[in-house]
Structures are given as structure tokens and as C-alpha cells.
Image (cartoon, rainbow, N blue to C red; front, side, top):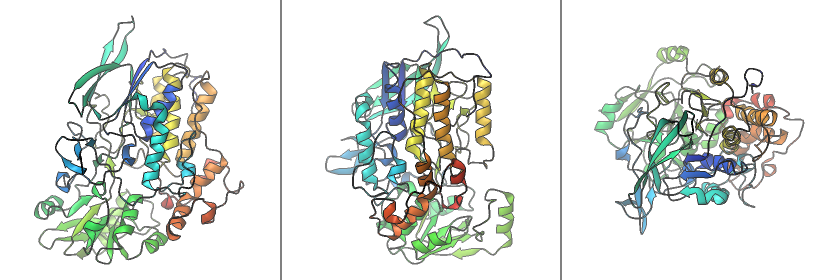
Length: 529
């Protein structure tokens, strides 16, 4: 973490008293806790949550949005307005036209265990319940978040959707300062409100807007001819729609492989997994009844088929370079006909439909990154605006805690704000070595380096006070280095283990002593979210 003391005098202090937090998911809750603990510096913190309960992506809805609502392809990172809710009927979920609590179905599916052991996943000040599996079920994580939120629950306005956020200048105290007007709608009563805040935390997550590439030949024509065949993992809940069908799963990320392992038990065999590069052999062997093929070249409308490029070798490291395309062009393609379902597990776009007023730079262009941020969360031109929880391939709960610890101290003027030149340099450094579209994707071990870097920045330069930021000691770094292998063993042994030791992983201090030791591990086995 670069120091700002040598390059600047004290920055102009903030005058932040009223803060709006958008979202009561894992990131919003973590930031709220740190703001609340900052020695009374912030008299008003309002958390706006469109769901009827905390949890964000972890709040499960048994019924997804209708597949007819999914555009194919889907590359639009600029929705004009937030998604409308579906409503929970009195006798069940979904289908309501305005009765009961509002639902915003997330990508959470029925049979899901975390990819991260709870001893590493947890917030620094709360353990998971005694006796839960070391890789907890989704309902255990949701219960954990409800428990974690107890201290800030009184700050949350549930079933309240943020419709717009706009920036304006205010000089009522004799100094030109930024103010944020936040427009909201109560989804139960329809009441609309506009309130003004000194700072805004956008913790709305990045699992709302699915990504389905438009570069695949005839994808639009295929979708029009065969509606419902193409879907996205956000709509996946369980295996039943795929029973006895010929299925293609696109993508070999954590969710793609987990969903493939479920579907292969009921679909027409073998299940086809499409990806640019070969997944680890041991992973495919564990899933069973699958054949991996290359990425999709084009859809075949008349045959209800798919043509695949050749599959590249697992050990190739130039995934996003032109060399890949040359390899694909030289090999023979594979054609599969009579496809019943193509499930894209291809991730999501960063979108902020309620925040369209910033244009220099624009927050998003193609949805693959958020622009103008230092350390992936602090807006450089408008440092009273923050976006916690954006990084991918990280352990998200403690990472958001670390970001919240910084914000609480910056906005209370106990941690000096670095000059804009330093913030811009941080943004440039954050992008070094990343491939296009992967700005926020951390390398293995990057989250440990990041969390401990923010911790050290606070300890070195803040005036004290507030909630202690998280820090990963050697044992936590060790857990970060072995958890992917431990998850594989957890799956193989029936998903019942309560500790890492039950899976054969016992901490030895000499194994991992630094972030560099984590980075040496095989990055292909990193399955963080």
C-alpha cells in the first residue's frame, strides 16, 4: 500500500454526517458495521434494501424470473431502470401481481454449498454456527448474515428500492461540497421519497445483470426459433428442467462446474461442457458423465444444434490473446444436434441503473469493470462515493470489511485522503497485468495482499479509533492456499465434514508464511467467488 504522507499535506477534511448505503447484502452490512463503530462520527446511516430481508445474493428465491424475460444475447450494461420486483403470494413464491413481499430472485440455487470454508469466509467478529459443515449450505450462510446484521438492522429500510442517485454541489456551510440526492420507492406502499446525503455507499452487488455473449454466430436467430432453449445460470434452481434432456453447460467457473455436476446425474449422457480451455482433469473426473468441448462457434437453427471450436490445452495461459483464435481456426470443429438446453454460466456485468449521472469518466462502458476507482472501491473524482465488494476471485466478506474500515476512517477524517494523483496511480497499478475484461479479477492470493494492505494503511496512517480492520495471519493465508483442494475432498467424501482436519488438511506453520506462498499455488484450482 503506497503511503500518501510523503507526497501531500493534509487533505481537506470531509464533512460527512449522513450516509446512504445501497444494499443490505454482505458488503453493505460490513461497511455499515464499521461506520456505526466510528466513535459516533456519523449520526445518520440509512441502508436501503429492496428485498424484505438481508442477505443480498444469498437470499434464496425458489422461483427465478421467467426465462422469457432473459434477453439473448445479453451484453447491455446500461439498463434504464432497476429491475422490477416479482411478488410473493400469500401461499407461495412468485406469480404475485402486487401482493405480499417483493422478490428479486438472485442466482442462488437449491442445492448449494459454499466454495470457501467458513473459517476463512467469515467476518472477523462472528463465527458460523457450531456444527455446520466446513463448506456451509446456502441456508447456513443466509442465517449467518441475518445474525451478523442484528447490530445494524434498525438502520435498514426493507422493501425499498433506490430508483436514482444524483450529484449536486452545495455551499450552505460556506464551502463548496458534494451532496447526493437519493430517490427511493417503498415497494409495499408505493411511496416515493427524495433525501439528501453527504456520502453514498453503492453495495448493490454484481450478480444482477447476466452476460451472454453476442459474438456467437446465429445466437439471436436460434433463440427466436427455439425460445427457452438458451438460459443463464441466474435462472437455475435445480435439475428437474434438465431431466432426460441433451444439455450443454457453457463455462467452467465455480458455478458452471457445480451446476454441471448436478445436471449430469439426470440429463441425457454425456453432458457437454463448453469452454475455451481444458478444465483440470481431476475436476472433470469428479463430476463424471461429462465431455468437454471448445467454445461455441455458432448455433445451427434448423438442426437445433451447436458447432464447437476445438478445445485448447489446459496449460495454455494466453486465454484472451489472438493466439487462441489461431489455434481454434486450425482445428476441426464438432457439431452436436438436437440440443434441448444450453445453460450459459458466463457471469455477470457491472451495472448501476440508478446511477447514470456520472460521465467523466463513465462508471461502466461494456460492464466488465467500473471506471474511476482507487483500490477497486473509492471513486477518485468523487471520494464521497464508494463501491465495496466489486472484486472477483476473492474471499468477499473480510475484503468488504477492510474496505468499510477505510471508508469509516476517511470520512471521519481520522485517515488522510491521499491526493488525486496518488489515487489515480493506484487505479493504474490495480490494472497492471490484467487482461481485457478482467480488471476486477484478482490473482490467487491477491485478496490476502489487498486485505492486509488496507489493514497496514490504516494502522500506519490513521489517528486511531473505530472497529479493528481484518488481517490475515499465516493460518488464514494457509487456508486460502488449500481450500480449493479441500472443497474437492469435501465433495468426494459426501459433503458432511465439519473441519478441514476431517478432510486431511492440518495447518503446519511452515507451509505458508506470506502472500507470496499463496500465489505459488496452481491458479487453475482457484474457485473463489
